[in-house]
Length: 245
Ligand code: BTN
Image 1 (tube, rainbow, N blue to C red):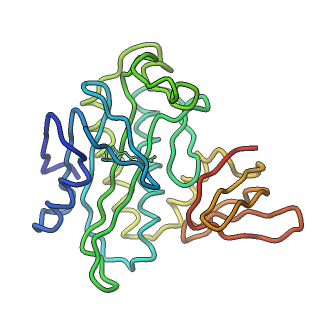
Image 2 (cartoon, protein in one colour):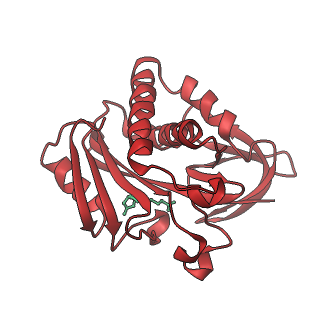
């Protein structure tokens, strides 16, 4: 991963560039990195604030031979890889909020957006977008985000070397990805749970069909979140926004 890097100073979204390269048969492990995104995309059609010089905005192209339904596991795998890299390079202790937000001291530092190119039930490529707030100061965040978002440097109290963090992410991602292809999701799930913030706590999942509040039991081997409501009914959550408490 990261053998082929396409670096751009400014792009609309690295996801879009990666989609194009994915269709053009780019090698697995090809990465698109930008210093700035004008139209950074978040999950659920939201925007992702991606200012110049401060963050890591990148998209990784993978071509796993797995069923479509297993693709969400790669999002969880990526969250673990980025968490490991942050620990190694900064000593900070990130926590994962299901499915893919990384928080430090309760505020979001990383978002992951996984998109698929598939034909029928066959994956052509998986485009994993990783956005990390690295060196922003508090005033670099729009006011509305300051209560919920932070950067690694704010939490650490010093600037962080972006190039070295990117390198560590490639190493961790490649190691976990190879482990995953060899042994399946189970070891990744255990690692994911060791970083997870919400297991055993009361959470509310806001889904398209309504809200579910209950105790987060963990994820199953597909990466699906299990919540037990107050009546003891266990719900499987495939896609939602999670609120703690
Ligand atoms: C989220 O909503 O939490 C996911 C945010 C993902 C942002 C990254 S930045 C690099 C890549 N390009 C994009 O446009 N989005 C992803």
